[in-house]
Amino acid sequence: MSTRHPDDEILLAYAAGTASHGTALLVATHITYCPLCRGKLQAMEQVGGALMEALEPAAVSAGARDRVMALLDGDPRLGTSDSRPPVTAVTGRTVLPRALREAAGSDADGLAWQPVLSGVDQVLIGKAVPGGERTRLMRIRAGRAVPRHTHRGSEMVCVIAGGFRDVLGHYGPGDVAVADDAVDHQPVADDDRDCICLAVTEAPVRLTGRFWRWLNPFVQF
Amino acid sequence: MSRIAMTLPGRSMPAATARAGLGMIEAGWARSLVLARATRLDTAMQRDSAPDVRAVETTADGRSLAALVDAVARNRDRQAFGALFDHLMPRVKAYAMRLGASGPAAEEVAQEVMLLIWRKADSFDPARATVSTWVFTIARNKRIDLLRRENRPALDPGDPMLVPDSPRPADETIERDAAEIRLRAAIRTLPPEQAELLSMAYFEDRSHSAIAAATNLPLGTVKSRIRLALDRLRRSFKDE
Ligand SMILES: [Zn+2]
Image 1 (cartoon, rainbow over the protein chains, first blue to last red):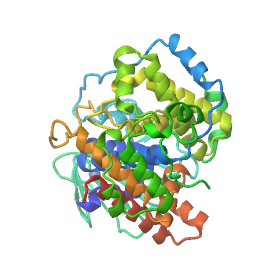
Image 2: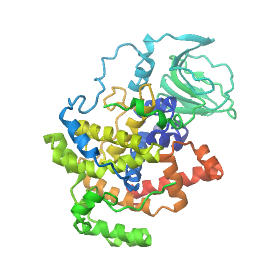
Image 3: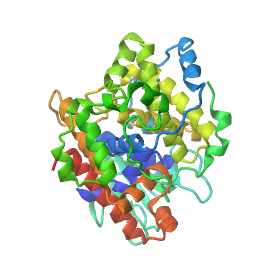
Image 4: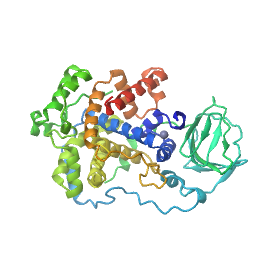
């Protein structure tokens, strides 16, 4: 069971808000299937809250309270509990977890799959940053093997539908596999159906460095 | 680098503290904090001072944060919001500054977080989270949203794909408050070398290998110290 979950550093990066976009997407996908990691994450968030509470409180400027109180009046109280619209009706055979569906722009059957290897199609998610991480959905046709390949860095995979087998065992929906150069990695999809998974390669856990100096233009009331 | 401060509730909030006076804080919790701060008592001795469960998560003058959030949600209670502001604003600002924001930028972010607290008060569920956990996730998400153009990947608890939790007892609130007290005590008594690395992992936007490089520690040491710290804090939740 332990090899089927993202490791604690990954979960902690998500809890702390420092995970890269692809890593965060993989975690949000995995915890849709995994109550265990969802519980771990809640505990990590509670630790984050307690650590924030334990920070030396910062002095607040004199007018801040009045400014915020004044803004309450004009507040339209939009999106009181959550600004996300309700889940839309799901059609099609292969259903993606919501975070993934939003990132990909469609459910699995509506995506523009591109063939990359014999028996393997993919859809890139987001912009590929040169030298940065790559996030994609992969579809391995039923019973097909992904040709032996190497990873420049590590690759994290989360199964969405179907399953595959490699030297370490079998992976089904929600399971996370981590491969790097040390692992001879040749996954074979289950015979009965196509295997769809989310793959994040070279996932750095840091966000984007010290962006704060550019922050002001984005902060609007 | 600022460390996890051993703070009293309300410390460094001059106005609120002056109004309330420390004497009004629930005696048990405050006393254990003062003692822990002065002498770093070990966990066993803190248990002797038996903190009052009701005293967890309060403002400097002893008002329950959860009750204040509830008053904002139900009645749009501005006075309750003001009390929340006095308690939370300096902490959220400190969080943003710890993550590298300048004072003015941190204050703007913290103000936005306070407005979200006003707007989203009815999404706070005391059966699921403490107020500080809820505020931490709002502040964390606000920061990510400001830094990124993309959608922030998040779990949708209403997703039809969700594999549900196993059923839990109906009312865990009292147990959770007790767990929060134990958690805070456990944080205060973490070995300094663990506390420092844990705090870097939460507040410095660095991977474990970047932390290793910054501290000149072997990566394995960084990983094991953070794991030890997290395990210790997790155990404190469960009162083991
Ligand atoms: Zn898991």
